[in-house]
Image 1 (tube, rainbow, N blue to C red):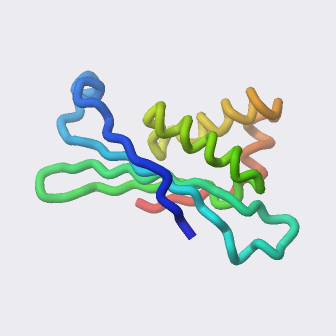
Image 2: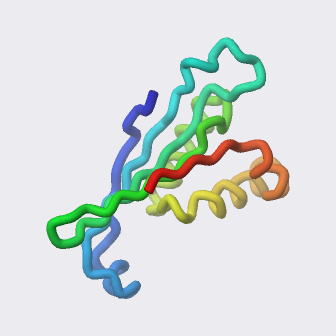
Length: 122
């Protein structure tokens, strides 16, 4: 189950500096893996980031997330808050998770990535 956490629009000036002329909205979701609650080796919480770029009559949607991140709801809420405040996009998710794991858990990115199950929707 996905629960809406928050959204952010990337500032027009930031987009213009990057050569992007279309508005971009970012949505952040907390995932609760209800089907795995009884399985000991599966994390209860995950995250999803959805990027929507509004171009002409069409909207281009990109989504990326981590299904099994942690059993600690406060940790997932903290990460989502950090993502929202810093406009983390789906493509930046890997790097931010690696930086977070290095800083807070002293795990290397290689170990962290091997423990996580990523998914993408384009």
